[in-house]
Length: 109
Image 1 (cartoon, one colour):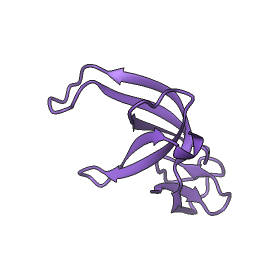
Image 2: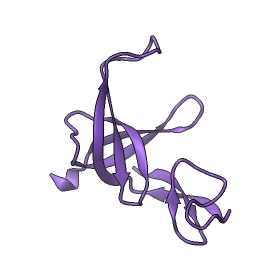
Image 3: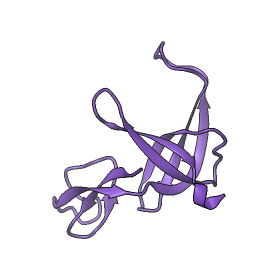
């Protein structure tokens, strides 16, 4: 499954979240492109409290450094630890925003 990243057609830089201008060259020649979502989990934490009453706790989240050069926050699959190679899977929330889940990269097993 792929994810969508904003990509500058002028310089090729990927960025997330989406912006009005490229973070590298400041041009507005931006398109959404498909990405394989591969990267490495660089940090993880477990949430034990939430202000949202319907949130299932505990909830593991982490920062993923994508091979494409951007970092995203993702929900973590079972057994994913910092340093692991991961693949992001995207789903849409109620407002149609991408929500990421990081699972261990099967190619790295």
